[in-house]
Amino acid sequence: MPETSTSSPELRSGARLSRAQEFLKPIVYGGNDGIVTTFAIVAGFAGARAEGAAELGVLAILVFGFANLFADAVSMGLGEFLSGRSQRDLYNAQRARALRGIDGGDGTSDGVDAILRERGLSAGDAEQAAAILKRSPDLVADLHMTYRMNMADPRSARPAAAGLFTFLSFVILGVVPLVPYFFLPTVELTFWLSVAATLAALAALGLLRWSATGDGMVRAVAETVLVGGFCALVAYLVGALVAAF
Image 1 (tube, rainbow, N blue to C red):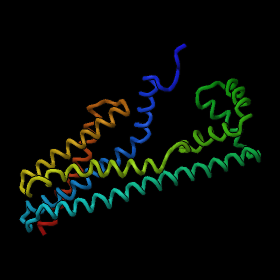
Image 2 (image 1 turned 180 degrees about the vertical axis):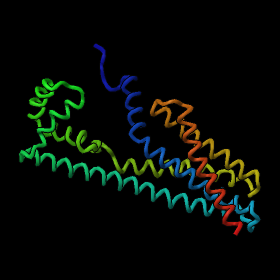
Image 3 (image 1 turned 135 degrees about the vertical axis):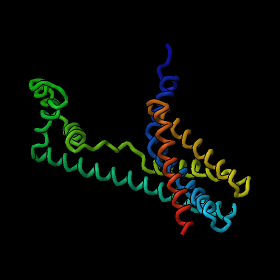
Image 4 (image 1 turned 90 degrees about the horizontal axis):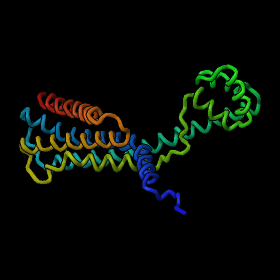
């Protein structure tokens, strides 16, 4: 008799997709911020050089770039971790309050009928379904949290893993704008190679977003590149403006 285990290709593919979707937010946010943050250093130096500022060598760009990269990566990773923990703690506190209200008869259970009617059930069906659902205080609390408090359930989230993914994506993608400066001096060509590398990294991030969400590929890539490119342009103009004074 053939086995129906989680080792089937379809289930393995679904598990990989689920993990990609779970960590899509920290990967995209961390990666985008890493790319833009590091390129801001490069663009700022390039803008200053264009206005005739003092010569800034490769070492200066790499030192400032890596210092900024790792400082911000740690900050982003810890911020994602603390944000996830805070969100989970808040949800648990509000859900515990809802459960106490159900046990104390404060009327929380009475809202189930209205929730079901709002979701499309007729008054009669909503009343019958609510009578069954009210037998489970946990289920009533979940409905209250989702449809009355508008809070998604974060109890299965992994804040530590999300923080780690944010840190790694920030560092891995954030180093891309610096790569040309490992091999070439600070000439105009090096800056434009950094621009090309930055756009390629943003496009790769857009493709990752597309593969995880299934949205339109052109839209996913274009939005990611345009948002990151706009931030990079601002950094270049700020560098030029500061150097001008």
